[in-house]
Image (cartoon, rainbow, N blue to C red; front, side, top):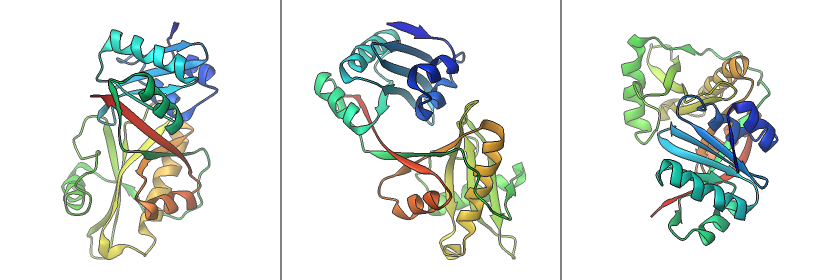
Length: 241
């Protein structure tokens, strides 16, 4: 078992696994990573509101890494990974329990768009917060939440903010989109697609890869992101009981 010091170490050990490389952006600012027998674990504190431990590799080696990470950092770090791996991990470590599955989506290709979107100013943030409160109150990303860097938005002809989304918890090589919401009255007009295209194109230019997380039940959002060139990867987490 040996510790990995940089995101490039993690990229080499995981053959560029996007979720691991995203988490590795916290190395040097509280994150830790280890490799063992073909497996890796990247522990990232407070990344998208959770202490995450992204894992890859053979399940027995991952179980050893989880024991090591929990001994070093505590059991608050939740293992995240492919469903089969996490299911096998829970069988081997009975103090862990499965959480609700979700999807990780990412791309390295910019969509074509003439999106009438732009970055919001501080004066716009109360409107973004109000839209989230009304339509998406469970959003992890909120104006003022640590790690949420900036908000993009689209206003209608009356000046009302009808779509917004955030650059949130991005790390050097992966830009992360979160908090995407469209006013129900404006759905079906393509504004959500144009907003997301703006975010993807802008973050790609800065980070080289763009990703987001999406609930499995949100099929409309999944279809939208797929049309924009993002590929979905099923993911599940587990946590200490």
